Structure formats: structure tokens, C-alpha cells
Image (tube, rainbow, N blue to C red; front, side, top):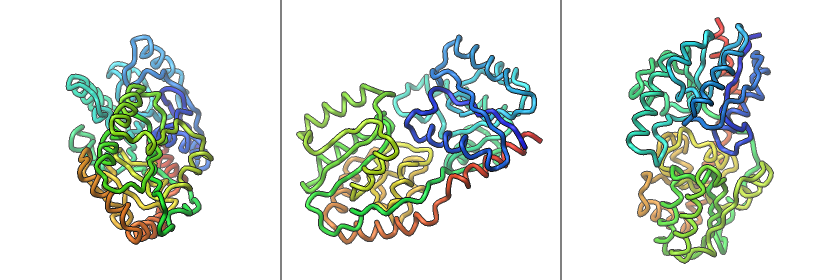
Length: 352
């Protein structure tokens, strides 16, 4: 059996799609012939202190000689070349999305992260990405050879169809958005769009932690108050899996206003429940959302998002058609065992 260390910065229980992906893979690799142990790296990545880099170097050096290092690129892409060179073991980098594409970075920060990522990825034995879009970006903008990249899209487990997705004429259409409250998720664009929607038959629930960007929640609440939408938009923080499932069950429509996503795991969770979708095309979202199940608009375009929301709010037959298509597409989605199996193959190849 091959062996690997899965090195992940911060708390593995952090409620984001990336950490959720890592948890599923960590849990399932042994079933696919890879003995794995979790290594927790400092939480400061992708902006580590010198002390954290020294601690990371010590952690990685502690890996056994026969262990492949599978490293989440939230940390790996920010490691100095000298540190990577010092690690005398095969490295597989897991890239959820390029760090330089995070919203809100200064030009200098973007440039530094892009240079660091490019250098680090050139030294990896293999690279795993979570979407074909990310693969193409790494080839085009980061000079990563195509043959070095493997695509392991996130899995999704079977779920019950959301009961309200087939409701013909609700008095109030329940909109649901899921994702951390950070600028890249585009919630400010969603609020602007809803402010311009003529229909009054909606309520929006936003589920997501504000821990990564508390100011985003402060700004959103101020924006919502100025728009007079306090009674029509509710915030839920980080929820348990059971509580989140209840939010999906209580929704009529799923909304994704993100400016960029490396894949869009919350979107496939909505698909798995047969919810009709309104989404942007930011990053991989254009591919993750099937055309038959979603209304798609350009990222950051509040007027276009308002038109799509108005259309889905006013047309119950459209909602039902999109919901039926979403439920049909859900049956084709990969499972987490498929994802883990692909990564296990990469680890075995690196071990050889």
C-alpha cells in the first residue's frame, strides 16, 4: 500500500468548500489503497510568517522516507523555492484555485502570489486540480505542463430532492445562497440585483461564515439597510451538515453570485437536490452548472443578475423545468469515491 502525508494549513474543520474537499479525500484515500495521515500546517497561509515557514519546514521534514507529500496549495503555492528544494520527497500539489485570483488583492499581492505559485508548481512532482478550467489556467498562465496535471472534480453524495423545488405557485419564493462571506462570493452584487428586481415575492437566505472577512458582513448589512431589504434577507453563519441540509430543503431557487470559483461545490450540492439555479459564469461555474438547469449571467453584472432573478421569480414553469433538469443532471454527478480514487492513482504514480 502506498503512503502519503496530506498537509493542510489551519483547522481541517473550517467550513469552506476547499476544506470540505480535503476532509472527504482524507477520509476515503485508505479505501483506494493509500495509507494517509493528516499533517496540520500553520493557519497563516497563504501569507505565512517566517516562524510559520520554519515550523512548516520542520513538519514536512518529519515525513517518512516512503511517504508522498500531498500538500494543499493554499500552503504549497506560498512556500519559498528553497524550502521546497529541501524536501527530499515526491510532492503532489492540490490546487483548488490559483491564489492570485482571490478578489480584493492589491496588484502587488497578486503579482507576488502569481510568481510564488508559478515557481512552486514547477517543482511539484504532480498537480491535482478540481476543475478543467483550473487545469487550463495553470497550463496557460503558470507554465505547468499538461501531462503533469490531473483533474479530480469534487464529488457529491446522493440526496433527497428538495420538496419545494416542484412547488408551482409559492406565496414567497425562497432564494438560497451558500458560501463564506468574502468579497469573491459577490454578495454585494446580489443585493444590488435584488434591489432592482420588481417582484416582491422573494426572501433570500445566505449561509456562510464571516470569519475570513468580518468587514464583508458589516458592509453587506449596511448595504441591505440602505436598500431597505432588512426584512427580506437573512444571514446564517456556519451550519452543521444537518442544518445546511434543512436550508436546501426549504429553498425554491439556488443563487450563486460569485465573481470566481475554482469549481463550485455548493452549486453541485444544490443540483443534487434538484434545485433550479441562477449563477454567474465566474471561473469554473460556467461548466459546473449545466445549461439545462441554470440561468447564467456574467460575474459582477448586477443588472443581468436582476433580469435573471426577475425571470425565475415570475415564471413557475421555468422554475419547474430547471428543477427537473437539475434533478436529472444530479444522477450523473461524480461521487467522492471517484474523486479519492483519482487522487490515489496520482499518489501511487508519484511514489513510483
